[in-house]
Length: 63
Image (cartoon, rainbow, N blue to C red; front, side, top):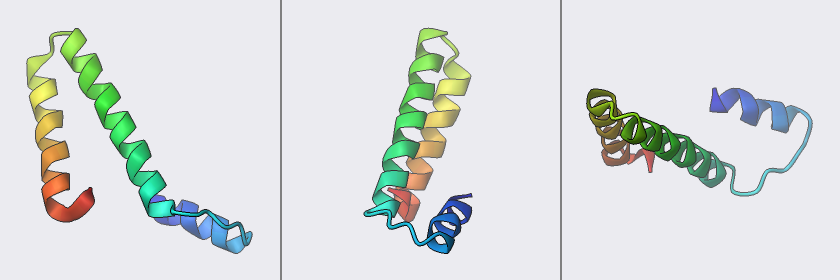
């Protein structure tokens, strides 16, 4: 999906400084918000699943 946004901006010749870092920040914000939701709703399995997903992406070089 991020490639589509990047292509959109490039086609319209719109400069987006630090695109990759901005996208990573947004993804972190969404992930942390979801963790907070699962914590407040006491959904331990969903919380742990998302935590593992986040950690696997971090270890794979996604952030």
